[in-house]
Image (tube, rainbow, N blue to C red; front, side):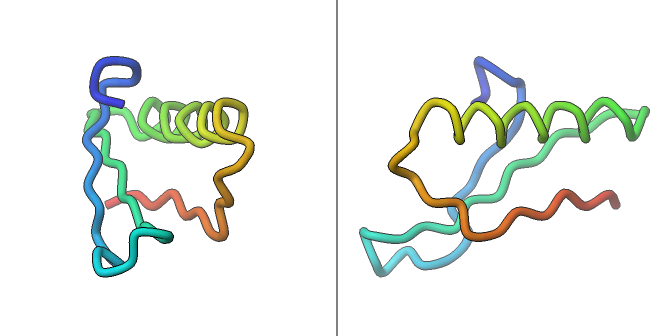
Length: 63
């Protein structure tokens, strides 16, 4: 993700179970529209690249 989209990524929950993972991605920009578009591209890239990965929830938040 860092090289392709210039976003940070961390596994933030469910580390005790190898079958599940909760990942968080972060992007920083002075313009709030840029990170939102990047996060949407990240989500689409995961959907298209790994059809066997089930995304059960997605939330794009601005701070």
